[in-house]
Image 1 (spheres, one colour):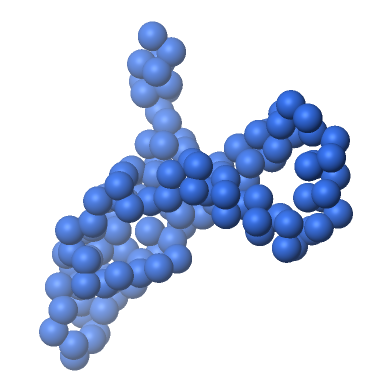
Image 2 (image 1 turned 45 degrees about the horizontal axis):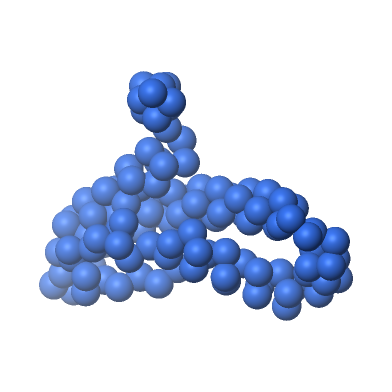
Length: 120
């Protein structure tokens, strides 16, 4: 994860890669990491259903790890606010990372209320 500590006004919705960008990256990653799988998917998946299912699963898994990253950096910021001699708004940074955590939590672990609102 890229951590721009100078950005104390992040726009997570605008700065997080879009689904299209994520899919582009994941296809190339799979091509490099597992050429046999990539070749099989490209040659046997004429309707792209297997690709779509795999990419969706990978995006969800990666998104869940984004939660852990935000939480970890938030805790780090709190610790640094007490121990670091560096003049930096570590608490503000922690608050921003918790905002990112909440955003991804809603996206990847919606509450029952949020899920019901999406269905309507």
